[in-house]
Length: 294
Length: 307
Image (cartoon, rainbow over all chains, first blue to last red; front, top):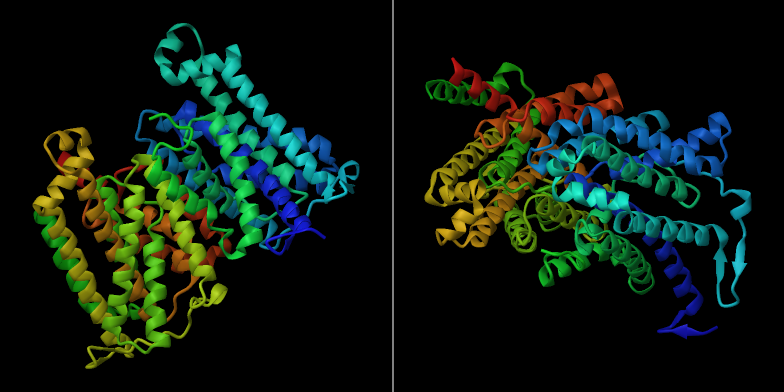
């Protein structure tokens, strides 16, 4: 068995793999945060709660209605996105034009309501979601064992992230979104329904979080708290990448996942805090974030 | 103005007589500790315009330090509290230097993330007792003279501490230093153009607020006899924001009234509704932000001005 610094290569690769899976979730979540922030100027604290809601929607669909994984992959984000749309329409919309801190506080309250309710309905102990048959099993790559589901998560995340990036940076719809960010009243004067655009963006960002939740359900324990500490890591990822930068969110999400995985091999005690330490260093050296312009 | 004076007299009398009116002293002490915590937080948000989403880091770390030196090294009450305040002040210096590089929501997100780092240190450091925290913290004695074991004596020590913190914050806000903080809050570019080194002012305000939050945390660990993860957890940072917002950001009495409301609600609601407390706290947050942004004291002041 080959070793590096006395650690078997297979162990290192395994942890890097796990890191890449976590990085996929970071990337999808920070992408949604960046999209919402970019257009609405709202830091969506409820992002982790919507992520948990996505996982629970899949779980409930399977247990109560017999909806399989593949349908849940589409239906759960739709359902949760709809919840997001309602929340935007009834609550967030009232805060536009005020200090953005109020948006942060409101979504924090929303997160408490969602997570508290999940806790009350489903209890404190976690539940597991079965890996779908078609994705169970492993690839044997010779130098390491790769569970198929993990490879699937990474692949889906890469496809979703880059399609979102493509839509926003390279299509007419994306150009309209960016125009709304620059000058909403002018865009409105051109006959674009800006409030509808904002509503749809929030719904889409929330649906993205829910999709990450469904994807993560088979690899982690589904609990009401699964999103509450994750959202803080994702905030740090977004600060590192530079808020509002789509590509920055994707790249730093993936990279930090890998760095975290690597830390688990070298110095496990620090794996929980390494992202925050990197954030502090980035802020000292480059306060606008790695990809931010300011 | 006259009603404010009357309010302070009534509130002061109530604090002095509370134990004889059948209010449980330990509950009252806990309430006062959180009131101090909220006042410290308000110094930052209300009077300097910085929303820290990580104030539990200072409260919690200080609670742990005091609990540790009092339990493992048998330090007296005053020196144990001093140790906690010094540590939270140093942490405030480090976190402040990093966080004030950005403003507004970024500041909030950065303080949140760094507080999460502190939380993990509290969870994993060798002396903090992991998931259990540090239990059975002795109150010890004050300057070797007053044995603080009696709830009654401890209560008056906490009242004195609270009055001192409250008066200190008023003094800071009304000082020339406080006026500059207010100027920075209202119009930062203007304060810069007037020649103030705003980062220096912000950092000093941050450190003062961190030390006062730490003081509240230290006192809490002596009062209740434990330091636990619940002191340093993100939810505690959220609660202190709620207390301040509910009572009235940028008012002196607001955080105290907010803390009293939230702590009382938690104490009595948890018996009635059990685990729904989190949901209710979240809902109060939403209602506050949507309808009630001035808070209780702020709305009352507006009502009075209208009359």
